[in-house]
Each structure stands twice: as structure tokens, then as C-alpha cells.
Length: 195
Picture 1 (cartoon, one colour):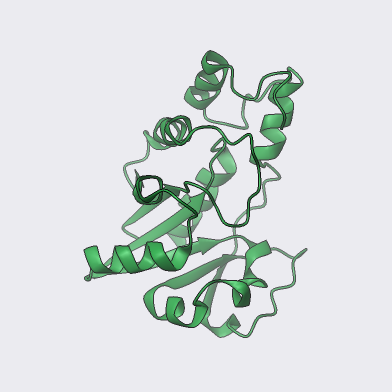
Picture 2 (cartoon, one colour):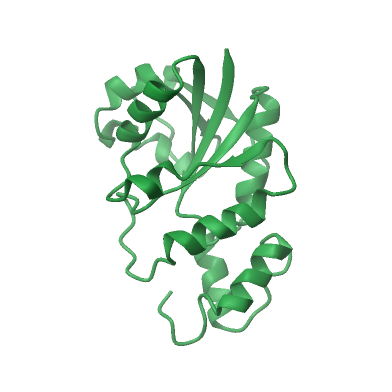
């Protein structure tokens, strides 16, 4: 059975931390592929200045193009509306019945799994992979159903990158070079734009 990891997010922008997480999980769990899945509107985000789905999709394509194990999935962008993991996984399992899916979540999300829509049903569709993070409480009734993976901690976030761009600071070595070029050419996150 093919094993595919899913890394979802807004990817606004995708950064080297995302790539490191994906590669570490793929390597440690011997997954066949990692699918990067930009959300259309993530349920836990409330930003009104989100880059367009086309811009975010393009940035992911640019970020992952050098890794043959990485692919882009536009399923949530095409579906539109708020992106709930249960809807995504039902759709994926209907399309790929012979695939074992591994859904990658940050250490900050492990303790919040009980709040996810239809979490009990979701646990039957997908294996959750949680990133070990000492600063977060990983106590959850579902702890035994989560594979925890130790990934080197890199303190990079998309919000940090947006802030640095808006202040005219360098983002080199925080994002892949093609992503940095795209951000500059498009004038994303520029001064005067709320971040």
C-alpha cells in the first residue's frame, strides 16, 4: 500500500521550515510522497490579507520543484470554502482507496485535536503525525493514535517572513530562492500591506 503524507497550510508563503518538516517526516516514516496542500480558507485562520490561492499555489510549486518526493495538491483550493480536514480526507479516501494517508500536524495542534470536526471518524481515515515540540502540551485523549516525530526546530514562520518583507528586511535563507524572487516580483507583503 502506498504511503502518502499530507502537509496542509496556508503557505503564505511556504518556507524552509515547511520543507524540512516534510522531508524529515517522509524520511523517518519511509513515506512514498508528501503532498503539500494549500488551504482555500483554513478554519483556524482569520486573516483578511491572505494572498490569493493562485499566488500561494505558485509559491508552493516553486518551493517543492527540486524534490521528486514532493507534490502539490490543489484539492482544497478547487473545492473552495472553508477547509475542514474531514471533508478533505473523505474526498481523498474515495479517490485513493488503496493509499494510507499520514496527516502532518504541528506540536501546537496535538492538544487541540479534540476540537476538530468529526475527529473520531477522521482518526479512522488517516494516521496523524505530530511534530514533537517541548513548549506545547501534547496531552490529548488521542495521544496513542498519533505518531510523534522529532524534527529539528527551526524558528521560521510565514508571519515572520511577511513582517520582514513589509519592513524591507532580507528573507534569504528563510524561503527557497525562487519563492523569494516571486514575492519580490509580485510585491507581496509589501510596505503598507497589513501583515
